[in-house]
Length: 261
Ligand code: CAA
View (tube, rainbow, N blue to C red):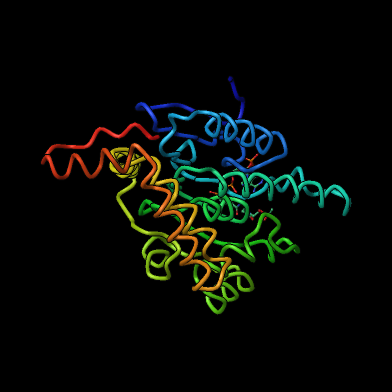
């Protein structure tokens, strides 16, 4: 499907690359871009062969510079509520994708851009990445989940510091506080992201999806119940072809050829 504000490509079978591409506004998210994001995510979700989604920004300067301030400026509270709900739905849809989603943050990831990265499963940053929640400088709080996902990822104290000071964080600090997993030179970011995606895609598709689901859902449970969830998932995995293939291949000393069933 053709999009105006993003591209969705498959650089290799099973690997999707979603690139937000609105150069005139440093890839800022307006309602039209959010609608396209929603459709693109649905496309990935509908593909049983999908293994990993990479999300990045076009242009080399910004991942996403936030929600679109020009579009938001004249909003009534009701319009603001609808816009926030639309953004929240997109972030939830990304989080709920069965396959791992990796943000390749290649520049400014501010406000809604930081929130977009936070809705991905983890973040790889370029040396030029800059993270921040500058909304308080605009007279508003975050609206696409930043107060919640940032707090869950880096802890309450650091999240509140960033949310209330609007201090921007560069790539090295982002790794140090657990916001990003790794930092790479800007020219290498996409290749390193693809390399990681390839590694994931070579593993059993069913257990990769199950691991994501258990890790995500388990965080909303107490440890004992979360471990029951894992035991049930472990048990069910013995009904899959991926389990049979993975263990047979190991014992036969050959590489596995997973079917994802
Ligand atoms: N919305 C709309 N337009 C934006 C934008 C945004 N979030 N960020 C940048 N732009 C536009 C600029 O207005 C500018 O447009 P013109 O060329 O037409 O003037 C163009 O992109 C280039 O931006 P700058 O000239 O500002 O570039 P710079 O290199 O000087 O600065 C920047 C880059 C530091 C990222 C700066 O653009 C900036 O601070 N942007 C806003 C960041 C921000 O506050 N984001 C949070 C938005 S609120 C939000 O996201 C709420 C929420 O949670 C839902």
